[in-house]
Image 1 (tube, helix red, strand yellow):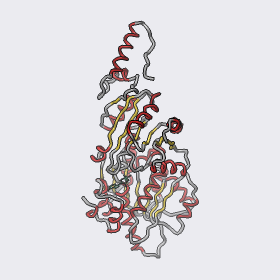
Image 2 (tube, rainbow, N blue to C red; image 1 turned 90 degrees about the vertical axis):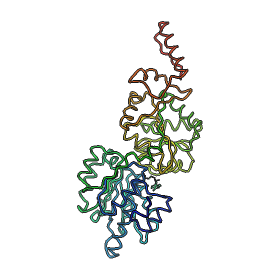
Image 3 (cartoon, protein in one colour; image 1 turned 90 degrees about the horizontal axis):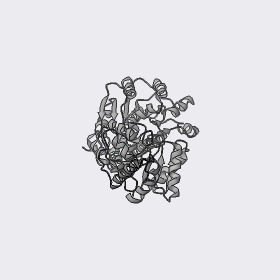
Image 4 (cartoon, rainbow, N blue to C red; image 1 turned 60 degrees about the vertical axis):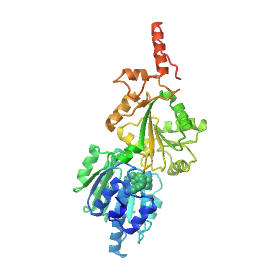
Length: 430
Ligand code: AMP
């Protein structure tokens, strides 16, 4: 399959070549012709599958054609609206659109709007009209209230990461925005997962959509190696330091559960001489961009982030994602590990399994079940978990792991203690 067969204009084919894309990804080869034919599309595709270009390319082509037909006399009301859940994704989608629009014969204006920064420059930027708007729902509503733009001419609506939009509580904002859009329009819906709420929204919104499911794109599944390391909760930072020293990773994105933990873990690493920074929702936009750029440029090696802060991030050449704390849900797990192994590269997704969140082992089993995939449990020499013996005695044993010499010693010691009538546990690992 080649891009040339999909119906894209020469200018867009050139942009694709300049981006270094040799062949369309699965979602691109299916979505591009469908979108160009005017159909609504329901795309089930992960971040990293190339979904942005899958809708951005046909959208640019259609918006340009429409503008050329309209001539210069008309008001420049936006023709396409792309709704995204986070400011990072808004910025990334905007950047992709700019890059792909580089060689178009006519100029297209692409406006990006997200919260957390002053609204005034965004209002100024919308003066004189625009062609394509990429926005988070809350800020878009603010702009509408300020009469910064009108959505009365929207011909194409894209919901990118629809599941995250709903997860982050944007349902009500979405309803308000949708109510203000023209009824006759094309709808493109992209989501990494397909929970009931997304299904309901799709049913209400899409007209006889072309369904495209790239749920388990073979290249992607193979591209990410999943590993699960059993370790005591109190030894996770030490194990992380050990891994950083041993594995030669250039860039690592570490996920933790709270803002406090982002700072705590990154401080501990920094004190140990490892260049690390924290990324959480309370950082200013400038702060976020700063740490992201520092990771991209190699100024820091480790970025410790919460789920919300890391949503939608596209860090090229990210070889490793580490779940220091396990994610709350299987959906978050999918999103987290999808940050690595992108665009044909390989990646490793590691999860620390320890006592956090009640019981790390039980929680990770649920994640595996939802994924339909089992990940072998491993232990790293010198960081063996004191809880493995009890986990093994639990639900059916831990597959993929043999008792180490140390385990056997521990069991023998425990038996000796028991025989001696002592109740004290034997803790030799810390
Ligand atoms: P996305 O799923 O849109 O977040 O895209 C993930 C990454 O894949 C981005 O870094 C894109 O630049 C890259 N990408 C998109 N399409 C292609 C393609 N056809 N070939 C290679 N890389 C691509």
